View 1 (cartoon, rainbow, N blue to C red):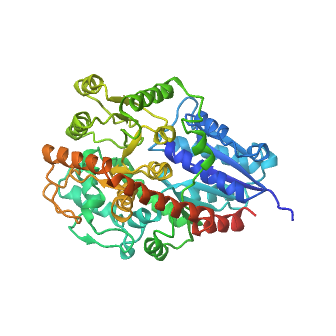
View 2: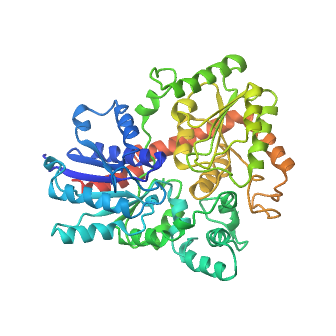
View 3: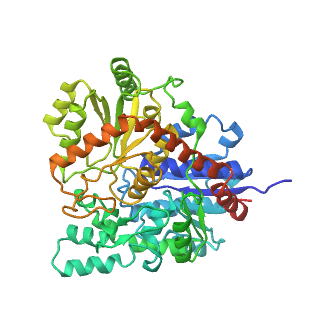
Length: 517
């Protein structure tokens, strides 16, 4: 049976975790659509890493690789948008590229695009599907269906974007912001208040542990509020409603209730396609087989090798808050963490990757780490390789979706320090539902004196913060570690089964059947 050629256009957000996730979902759809061509639009700054990522896809045949290409989006020569605040220049660049694709100027053999999948976290200040409609009408071409991709589980997207009637929390955010400004609050404080929408209400969804509403935003106070994004959220909602479908990295087998609530709120189909588990890429990054490293990567691996030789296997901690998160307005949290790591007994060597643009290290803290002989601070670390290194005992993580899935693949227990959004719900899933690690609560910001649904009160006292850290490190380094690892393996099996043969696989097949066959 022959298949007509189809063409998928992917538009990711600019941060690497989202770029990589978007690329992976595109490749997974390519496997299911034998005659599909894939065009990947990205910032020119991300293009080299995309090509490097593609070069590591050893399981892709040369024929499949020939059906993948990247196209850079640049609005003005030599000038790009801020990755988190894309605006007019990006729109102009996108429109130019799309016009070329429609007219066949960028490779006629690829054909007219059949489907656009775009990352909702791009937070365009306009509805992308509306832009597509305007362009296709102007060029007298058929409309291209657009799927709105949220590269996170379904439950946080339900919590953030569903209607208030169905459990959503962002519904009415602009009015709350305007009311807070009218009360005299600063722009930053009004934004935080509008986002948190804290009323002291205990929320008890069937597929998550009970939490008070203020617990869903444990670190927003410790970072500058991105007020420009607040004005783009209405456009995000408009884009969602204008789209032809809504994709998440959800696992139906774990998120049945949240999925049902989001479906009730949406006017478009929901496709929970699950996270992409690229076993070949994972195995290729294992330090036991990997031979090619940059100088910075080799420095990291050499440090971990040295710590393993000195302190033994499963002796070290990997710390990372991802590419965006950082407790910038509460530097004492960083002090508490570093002091606790250095003072730990038996010794706890650690690698700290601080990739956020907000990351700042006082000189005395850097000196303390260097003099300890136990720690290394780097701007970026090869996370897939680090998590598979035999020195790593646990992962102190913000619980971003990419990092969490990688921890599950590595079967490494976690200490959770979530900041916002999907991170909070991943932390709850892993530490309270699946018992794969320990959650830190005393690091929470803006919650002094407030009750935790799991018990206890947040004090924001440095001694309580360090005490909780010590207790968490002791727990995850003790006899519970084996039990935690068994539980994270079970969770990994659920994810793998869903992606390979379960609900996530079915959702991908539905997309292919409807748009790419």
